Length: 85
Image 1 (cartoon, rainbow, N blue to C red):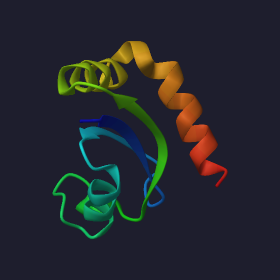
Image 2: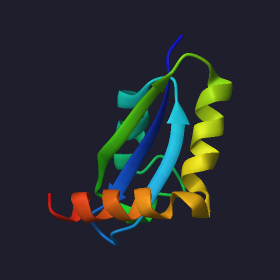
Image 3: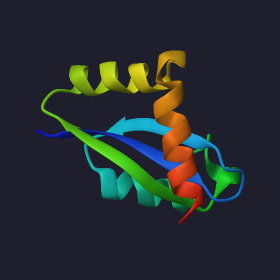
């Protein structure tokens, strides 16, 4: 099975959301349909980054890494790139 770490950009408030899933299309659609509590009021959301992993453990580790302060530059670059879309 393939697992994904993904980053969504909120066009409403300019913030990023980082998550992991087995089915990236279904999950992004759920976010944009308002079915995810944490992003319901931040729609519309666009997928700005995704990465594939062969195990859920690897995906969760990467998700934690991206959410950490040490990933600040990565997140700043994604935010800048997304705001230009």
